[in-house]
Image (cartoon, rainbow, N blue to C red; front, side, top):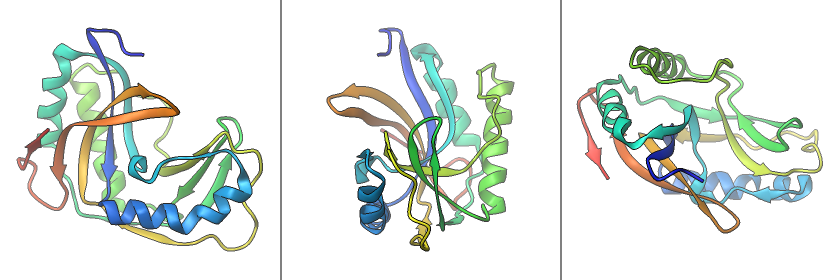
Length: 185
């Protein structure tokens, strides 16, 4: 749970509602096979950078950073399934992450470090978590391929909720436009 003076936040690519619903539908049977708890369709996203607890006084810096970031409109094809046993997750990954996505994440990480934020030391592994607490590996058959037309970059606050987390958009920036376009929330 976040302290009063902090917000638990991350930057994510947030596709349109239809893409999130299509993803949940496409993987429903595979998730059932793997067991665990499916991530609700409305929560499906691709995390670019998890920051954890950030003082609320620094949120405006994060909004400014998101506004200045280049945000290419890059289609993302999720075409492989993996079970990450260490964290008990079933994830969809892009076998060939688009260069624009990798460049956006690299720029975001560099800007965050430049502003004094702590970022993860692990390399970026673009993925969408489909289920948590999975008990079996996905079947070896071909996994569905889902394409996301990434609609926006979003600064998200994670709030505790019954049965999981609730995500609240603190700021949204459309992808495929200049770095100054901004829609506050």
